[in-house]
Amino acid sequence: MSEGKKGGSGFWSGFILGGIVGGVLALVLAPRPSEDIGGDLAERGIELRGRADEILAKARERTDTVISDVKSALEQQANVVKEAFEEGKEAAAEAAQDMQERLRRERGQAEGPTA
Image (tube, rainbow, N blue to C red; front, side, top):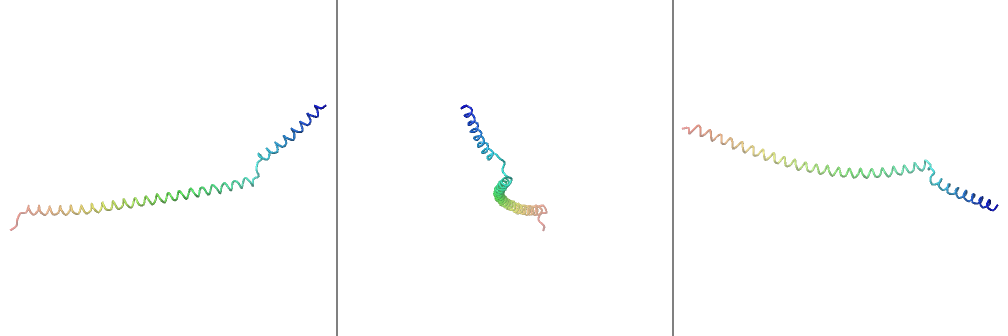
């Protein structure tokens, strides 16, 4: 009979211990209320929005820098082309003037002295 009492108390000890462990696991693993999930999602959304705003601000800053650099480079190149065009124009005018003078001299030599 002592074995029956001992076995019965062991059963109840195991039953109580199992209930405690099961209750703790149920609390840990139980689904959370939708209010908690919604709050977590809202917080995560706010965090992601903040990160997206930071990334966007950095991208805009980089874009502005690149645009400024490109504008500056284009202005420099435009000035170089303008200067080259003006120099070419002057050289062409000088060449045309030299050519006209040569033609006048050649015509003058071909006609000979008129007297």
